[in-house]
Length: 412
Ligand code: FNR
Image 1 (cartoon, rainbow, N blue to C red):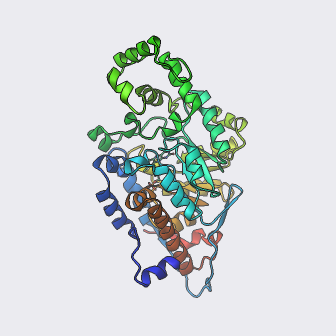
Image 2: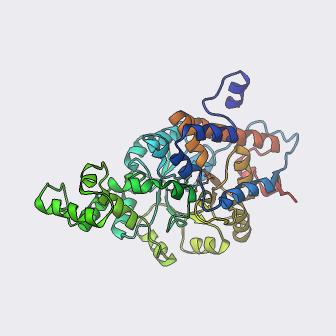
Image 3: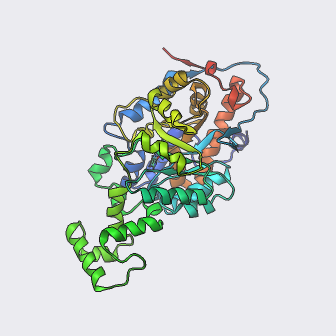
């Protein structure tokens, strides 16, 4: 009601309160490369469309005279009380849209008490992002590296920054077919964007040195080091001078590209994760009840039903359809998070009614960031939560638990 009252009293917000205008303005504020990467999807963009169409197929059923004057939006998630069922999704390479993206997004999230899931492909080391959040919960998202030493090192760092959960993203063992980026030749990682968790990692630096045959710590400019750099320049694109001058040595980028993800990852390996950390484990990118069951069998604490915002497989099943299926198959007990396609508070309401316990917001928060930094992120979050609150008032739901399946109907 604070947001609404401010608007009624004539105060203009820093970012538009509707997604369509937010998106238009964010596009104008972004470079072509940033927009291609952030707004783009896989292939023809059909999965992104399916995600939205699925929301259009579910209609909310308002209820009258319910007496729902005061509402409580807080939830308990993996043992922590949160002010609302909203978290910020992990997004890599956000610095395409502005410097120190992770720090600003972390601060914006913290201003509203909203947890932020730091991406493995983040643009600031997780320790710095954590420092920007004070006591607000932060989680860490892991891409399972080919190098198990790096997996352990990233987990140890996540534990040290007090992460509330370890989110393992399963749907990106290879990067999807992304024509917008490919056409511009502008995928960010090759330029060293989005690899801050790696370059700040001591184990990763050892791996880079190992592979280049360089001395381990603080390489001195020895004849051997120069020979190794020359050899690398012959074997990889970029000259000796590029390697010397680049703020992020090409060797780090090459190593990152080679080992950031492990396409041969199996459920057996995932089952071993519980022995490697005490953090709650969340698997992200599940789209079928079969996979959801396997996840629960190996004892994970929650799953995120997600198609990565339509960025991985073109013409994939809508994330919301998958959510309905999985909740119906598994019943009320498992903790299901949801993302892909949420654009408003009404969408959050729908996802909760269809079966989610909490939701992740992806692109909208980046659009808030590109328009108004940390403040823009906080406003986007506040707007979504405010609309959720109003929708609850108008459907008679006093708590998040009261957003039940009978408050939505599938349209014919
Ligand atoms: C992502 N997403 C993502 N997911 C993840 O697990 N690790 C990552 O590094 C990234 N990086 C990333 C970058 C950008 C620019 C976007 C837009 C998305 C996927 C993200 O966590 C989430 O699943 C989707 O963004 C949700 O869909 P919406 O809300 O964007 O439709």
